[in-house]
Length: 185
Image (tube, rainbow, N blue to C red; front, side, top):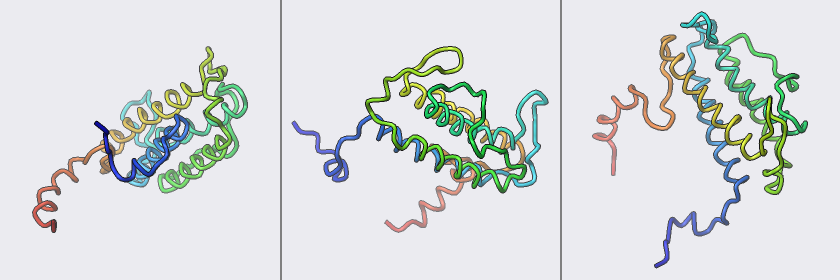
């Protein structure tokens, strides 16, 4: 028996791994931008743990992940020794979301010529060698998602309202019954 799927699935060509990565990366970049735009603007230096990153430092680390990793891939080694161009950290919360978007777009452009055939190529990554595919999915994308979760908590602790990422936040959840009651079906 044939699995029909959706109309969109039937008209789309199958995605290779690189196309799938780019689609997921783009979706995650939108969610990251949404969180960065929601950070409390007067809490850049908020730091609940004296040994941890401030809200502003953690927020910019999301940009650093994409900038350093994409730059390293194009240079043939991900070492974190030399910063890529244009990686100066903004010192105001209001500049973090547009700064991230810029760094993300630069990272996308850097990796635009990457091919499916290159994904198995191993590069030096800190103290070991990893295939480019593993660097993209792990140290870049999943690492970003991990720190974005930490930033969501910092946002809440700093008095902000982090947006729902993979589901509603508590404010969005509380508003659901009213929205459902008034929704026109």
